[in-house]
Image (cartoon, rainbow, N blue to C red; front, side, top):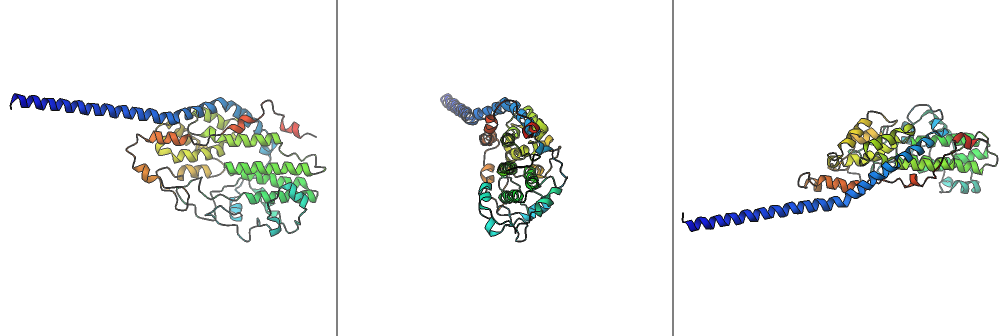
Length: 391
């Protein structure tokens, strides 16, 4: 081969090598820049979330301990599941069934108006057609499993955000009327006991919405106590202070069980104060954890391993284990009746798992962490419940 040809070919090869090297360098720089830019979008938020729960875990435990001392958590109850009754009696969100015509929870037309307890008290409605025996029948149970003994087929994969929930509102309406009837008949304490137990069953669905219904029902009891001219001395509703604490602790519990929360912080929050918010916190947090598991587990292996350990300590209801064993992930097709879009297509088109941690990171920033109610609680030594209620 002519020397000039060899030199020309060598020059072309060197130029090609330099060109390819420059392209690779630019690609690496672009990837690094993209990685830095993407991480900057979510890592500061996740760091702030971790710092917030770490800084407030002692406050959470302090308030949960105060709340756990309330007599409501220590009233004697018979062990059993009210689900076989309540799940059939009540109405469900669509696509669940409506309330059966023969359900004892059906209200007469003139009592279906949405009124406050004070408004019903002033309206003086006719309650003679109401039968409250179903409330007393529920005294045989200490929990309400809303995922077992259902009057409809539960679709899979399971998603707590889209599955039908019982219509708790009807329980609130019946509670107002039961308290009103108790005040009228001179038996307000008996009525209050029925409503307190209904509040307990709502809390013991192990869901956040159930615990908020419990908060509302206990507030109704407190209102009824205030409307009664001479309430029995032994009638001691949960105080407003404890009610506010209940709402704050239960609402914050999910934040302390997020996979973004340091494991030691989450473990402490779930065990302190008798762990009264452990199950509902795990239920609410595990929904996002399960959904993101294919993407997030490589970055949060310790948190996922800790959640697996938690499953070995059963909760009163099956909601948590159902969520964990049958819950859908971001790579699954959602149930046909659900409202969630099918993300499996675009997820599977991603080039490998490089972007997975970034997608998980961005989605975890909207994991609904909220401990504001906890931080707003008045600080200081709470008055013991027994002293509050003393005549």
